[in-house]
Length: 457
Image 1 (cartoon, rainbow, N blue to C red):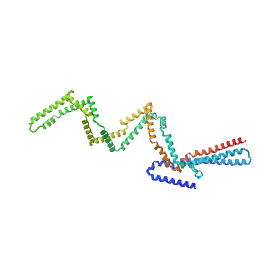
Image 2: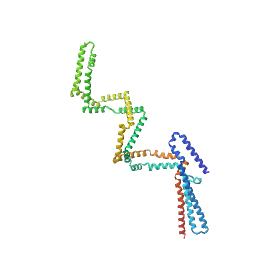
Image 3: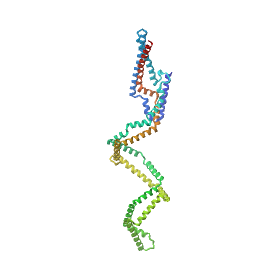
């Protein structure tokens, strides 16, 4: 009855696992490969299982052999064959006890001996989930601790090895090509509208969050103090002078057109000529005289304006309003969008071209970094610390997730197939326990019998 009950329970568990796998759909898919590995026997597993059966026959044959020896020795002892028969019988008897005890211990790992549900037997199928939890805790405590991770990574010497590898030109070329492929893939996957929205929103938020008046004021004050604005003034004055020379008629027509209608034409003409000469004279003097009063007035205006940008509340408020109006205009957002498109096209083209400046600089940087990492101890130590810190962060932050992966995976295995799988892989070695138990038991029984006889004599 116990054997039948056990088989029924196994069938129910198998149905539950199959039902859960079918209902899980996409969710159950990540563990599917592992579950298939634990519920199917590969040719290698079949070969290991044949080895287990052979070792079982050997261990059982040895048990039958010592049992036969025991029977013959007892018969010889009862027939008066001599003292030696007692020694042989004692050794054979103890060998049988050792063999049976070890058979019980090995069998109890995988199933109930003789189908009898003795407590603390069939340990693997009944305690599978607990073993998974214990395995997860063991891995977490002994393999995912900060000290262990740092010690193992420090012994590897990642910095020096990585540096020596990167210092080889072929390897640097390979890394450069992989980085270019990854960059092109990332830029291809990204949607332009999403990036433009993110970039535009980031620029607008950053600009709105920070007042720009004081910064512009400090920059303008520095430019004026260094005389940097004078080159701009020279450029504007030169262009104005050249424009006046080339557009004399337009200036005079503009002046004459603004005169009252009742004035005579020759008067308007004279006024136009006078205005034009004065404008040309002013532009010429501004161009040729570095100490012109207008230049000094402009310097004082810029200096005062720089001071107001930093300290005057009204000026700073007007600048902020102007900033908001500029950022809110569609032309500015279009400029951001077009800038992103241009940058993306430039990067993609550079990543595709093996002789582009971008790829050549990346390759040169990798070679230089590899040489430094291979030769300089400080760089090696810095890289090692980065790797150690990153690995420690991962194992300490996600230790529970890593160990739960072990626990959940073991829990998802079918008990019967898991038992068969484990037995196929370690059962052959476990059968040596039975053989050793028979041999050691025989020797122990012989020793005990010999000591008893010696003490009795």
